[in-house]
Length: 296
Length: 291
Image (tube, rainbow over all chains, first blue to last red; front, top):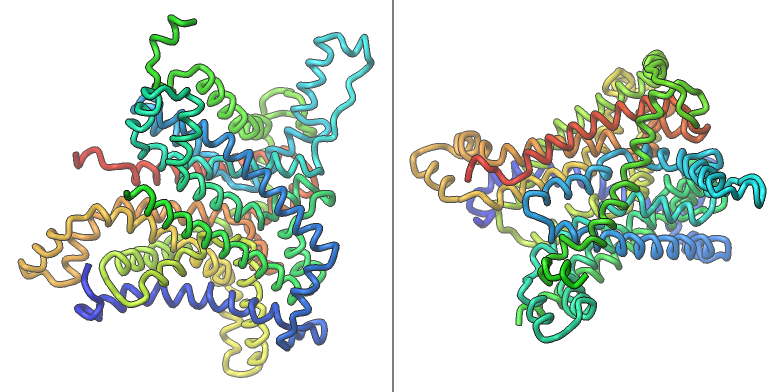
């Protein structure tokens, strides 16, 4: 790596396009909503930045605290379920025959590249009242002669509740969780596992006392990678949760699209940004501690 | 039971029947809804519940829906423009961060990663506010000399410029990451050799560095293509009433319920993105030919 002073022309030619674009279409817009989050509406179209904290205080009103709290617990549960599914998958891929690994990894990641909207839409067809899952259950119900014994099958209302949102989130984000887990489990020094087993620890004990701590950086990365987009998710609660499972993303969208209260929407988006920064700080902190620990 | 266990070493988790079963079930759950969506795009039934025979009429119907086709063409146009710009900017950024040491580099790298990590909705509303401000400000010049500006940006495809610019902003950092990871494997002695032998900065870039990083550049380009094509949230906030993209159009249809023409249109989009993704992954995979 050379110092930037050695070749200033090349330095600026390579630096400027990205820096300018990021400034114009990312940093300035963020600064604008940050400013707006301290502003007030003075008429239908005008917003004055008065330095008020009213927008932030408003997000602590009971209605919004409830929604924020719901967004957090839905994201926490969804992240936990993602981890519980993704870890065995990543683990299995790492310990599968080498020639299978690229294919298996591709199979996991591929759904991630399919449009989020389309994947969410695909779930509607599965979970709606006259959807695939209810039909399958009805078929099983009739197969067990329960229709003769108990009565006709009553389709379950699977959509438009918190459960549907959690299932949707897990479905949509699980592949994303596998990647960082795979990356760390693959680098795991297997002699530690052998040592643990040789010294008489059971498979479970080895897993929880050796494998999990050693792959913690991947777990933390995966959690953050999945938790942040879940928290701000708008599509999944909108399409699968309906009016029963509103999350922060939906409230923000409403402020900008329907309610036309931009300053409040801006404050809510910045609350989301603060959470994101906090999560990244946690990751950096854990990352640096991990490095210190393993480096011994 | 004991016999079967002895054929499997203690670390051969890949042979564990439970793990294999778990994997198979997960893959089925992951793919079944998508498979069903694709299958039902060929189903000869409007309500899309039971299989009533093969048909391609919903593809014809989607094809004849002018607004759907327009949205599709818009999406492809935006994706192509975004890919060209994001690839150039992303490659330059990758070269910059790979080659130079400079003050506050870690901070710059952190900011460059922000579009990747922050929730999409934050970026969506931020760009919406930017454009409304710029629009507000431009209207002040309506009768003045900048009048041509407004007219220019109502011509296709420049009317898609606002959406494209936002797409570039979130996709070029991805390109930079991909290209930079490719550059990490570059032996800088080649570059020095080229310069020692009298090649200029540009010749060295064009004949030595660029050929080496090409797989990374192509992978990055395809990545930004799929990112742009798939984006819903940011487009949802930046699209004006007269510009529609495919995901935004599909969203307005989905809100009205499940219908086979959405399945048909979605299937086409799935195929386009998957082809682009698979090519990108091939490009990114470690080069076998280089040994």
